[in-house]
Image 1 (tube, rainbow, N blue to C red):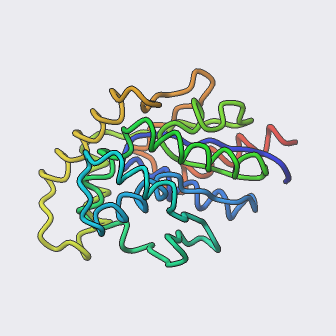
Image 2 (cartoon, rainbow, N blue to C red):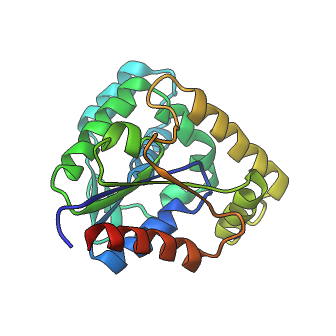
Length: 219
């Protein structure tokens, strides 16, 4: 399978990254976690104690930051930061930077350059509407707020033992609001995307639905 582009969008905690990774392996295409790029940049800004309102400083860091994917790892300035970007402080702050138009513009430019090479599956919030609107296959992955909270809780409880499920659900709801109402590339289901509610579906079921659909389209 060559030169296909697959867009996977959806809200926080819906499982789109896990799903996209598995599909990438099954179809032998490159997986790009665009959300990790925003997380990497958020990590950079927080690690340098830069205020989120300091536009000039943020733009300077944005211009000079080196964010890459290699062998299924996210690199920031040549350092692997897979674990660092999943910390609770990143969860709580990533939307503050992701909603900034100039940040999105720069990272979307990088994402488009990757997608132009073809043979990729990308997941994020605005992949099918902004990054690769001409993607051959588009999916919108969602789930109930409570279910997304439970999934995220299981994902981070070992690394963040003091996390409270109810607070986590509130954080996800807040992120939903920010992502859906921001002016720059809001979270939005593309008109031609296939929506899949994963609330009562297993991971294998969701992957099977998507892979079967793509295989039929390629046959």
